[in-house]
Length: 384
Image (cartoon, rainbow, N blue to C red; front, side, top):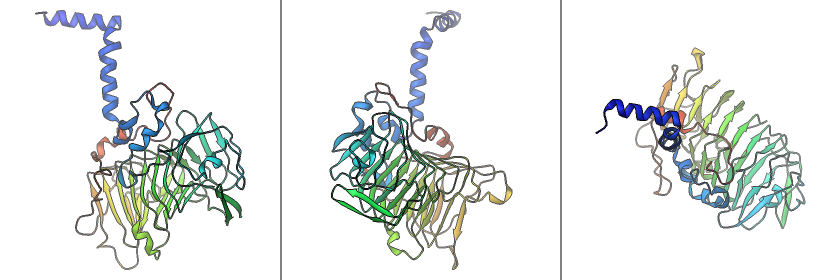
């Protein structure tokens, strides 16, 4: 049997020759990285053949939006033209693919900046997949998901969105209608279901970054990077809009970065499971609501600002009391004096189905689980 000194000498030799570094060490690094990936990413990012197997992404969502199939059962449509015509879109443009009746998995032939001339009206069973390119939708009206289902948006930079103008906008090959003009949201989800927004960058829009309103439900918002914005996410149109009691949204593995003020999210009437997100300070509050919503904050990482007057994570807009509202915190981690004001009685777990459920990690693991939030630098024939 070799002596300890012999073993040490062998290890040093292997390090100097590179054999240890190139084999066992790299293997250990790979295993560590794999372990650090969150549930969604570990489902697909290890596949070096992702570019030829793009639709496998549709099987990786968790939470309320996990049944969103997008364009999984459709053809690949390649965007080659960054121009836009809201009334009569040309083949090769993003709008032309987004309005088709048939399922489509929309990808991009090259990197591009798309400045829409009016809001992009998504049709059902569509995936917008930015992997392999750098795709910005910016500097004009942005995305509207209205009265549709099964939409996936992945790997897109959506920022600096502006209000739309009154005019005709096409939403299918056979129908166009008069729109009053979008408010300037990055993504507006209106009366829609089975929606998944994943690995996007969202910032600096005129109105909200993501709005979920008018009874939209079965939605997952995951792995996104948010920054430099006031009103980040609104779930529920109005306190008196009772149909919004149907809203169910999972907010998971997101990084709420610098320059954010409030609404991460703000919830009216409905239900939000806010899990394993990283909050990098806030200028007013992180999680808020009105009209008796149910909010389950689980395994989040809250880094409070240095200001002593805004350490509280939560804010309630209320006139008649909120003690019976179910707002719960479980396994959250609070840094720099952050704290969560809980309320209500009884169970408020999300009651996921078997296909929706996922294991929520302790909040201390969140910085690692959200370290790749936002669009990924994916290259063909290499794992992302």
